[in-house]
Image 1 (cartoon, rainbow, N blue to C red):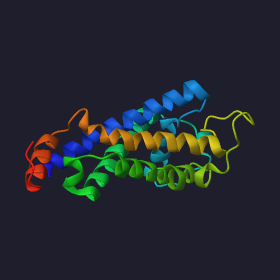
Image 2: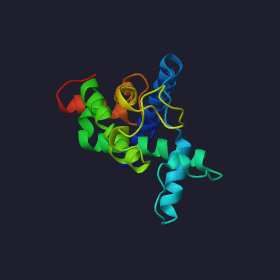
Image 3: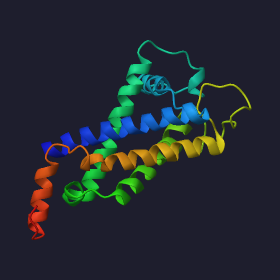
Image 4: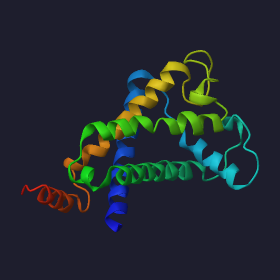
Length: 188
C-alpha cells in the first residue's frame, strides 16, 4: 500500500509538471493564459472561512499566501488524480503501462476545471461566461474554444505523462513488472 502512495506521488507530481510545461508552451506559442493558481488559493481561503465565495473570484482582494497555497493544491490534486487512476487500473497497468488508459483518464480529468473550478470561480460551466481572447482584458483564462483546447491539451499531456513510468520507473514498478510477467508465465 505504501508503494501505491509513493507511485501516486511520483506519477502525480510528474504528470502535473508535464501539464504545467504544456501550459507554458501554449502561453508562449499561442498566448493562452494558464490558470493563475493564486485564484485557487484565494477560492480555498474563502471556502475555509465558511463564507460564500464572491464571484468572480478574480475581483476578490488577494490574501498573503494565496499563490503558494494554490500551487500546492494544484500538485496535491495531481497526486490524488494519479492515486485514483492507479487504484482504478490495478497493479497490471503499473507493471506494464500503456498510453490509451492514461490518455483517456487524463482527458477525463478536464471535468474538474470545467464542472467544478470554473463554475466556482464565476466563469460558468466550461467557462462559458468568459469572452474569447481579444474581447476584453482579464486575469482569468481565455473563454470559448481557446480555453477548452488549452485544457484538453494540458490534460492530454497529464495522461501521457502518467506513462512516463517506462522512462523513469517509480518505486516498486520494476518489481511489479517482474511479478506480473512471472504470473503470466514470462520472465524478463
